[in-house]
Length: 386
Image (cartoon, rainbow, N blue to C red; front, side, top):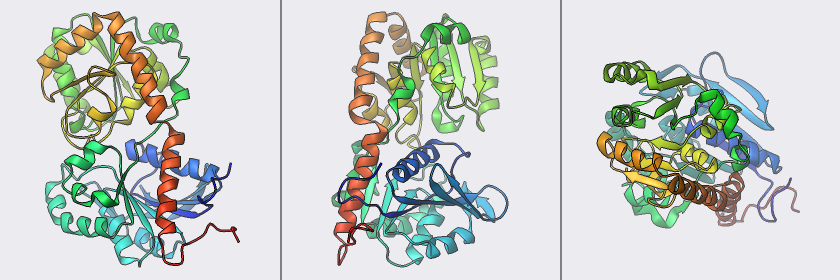
């Protein structure tokens, strides 16, 4: 499949710190975007760091993946002089940075003036010292970016880094393939995971996901079971909390669930819950997956994209963070009202289909590339266009 007129093919270089099989929201988004661009005929390279071992290059789903040797990891930031060198050598019509990754952004600053698009996935939230040190450099990177992609208008409004640069910002929401979550066998899913009522949580078990709030709400919901898909550094602490509250027998800790099995987890659910507590939860791709599966969602108001993706009273409920009693009340009302859940589930599916498909995401990103390249002196034309 080729791109529309004026949209390539181009040499595209994505830069971030990790790539699958290292999994996370940004890694999954990057993999999907790069593979889709390659499928449209672009020459796509992804430059990331290698978790272990020397620098190596592979071809994956039509994408050239360079995993540069890392020396160490400080404050969740891989240090990789090899990535710095590879970025300077790698040819590209457009460099696409995925932030936050300070090393990649500094490497681009030092590597000369090439057209650059930056997807601003999130502020630096927990690493406050790093954030203070990095802030002036990040502002410099953002000022030099040809375009900045924000994943939601809410994040533009609430980020001190993005709001002053609105003229350079384009809102490009993340996307998924909703077909993966259609025509689900709910009877088979409930036979596997239990008849319910079932609450579903999917995500890395990190502090900002706020799973503790959901666990603390369970004593008010004596009939509900909770399916937890994911692992992470807070896993042991949250299991201990569930044991102290006497609800561990109503939680199924599923561990890491494969992409192939994930739709079945959603299919077993009645309500999806993302009780995040910090701005690190900038968008919530898991909300899109749950919505595509027809589940009403309960999320929290963080001033980020979560309460733009999940619309209060339309596709679910939006509540304050760290409020287990409020969460329990909202979940109890949803679990007691089959018609309300059905209505919200239909609205959720329709919202994903209209706004958040992978196809729409790729088109929007390519349109931004075209805007950037057309504005270059002596406007770069697609290779092979004559």
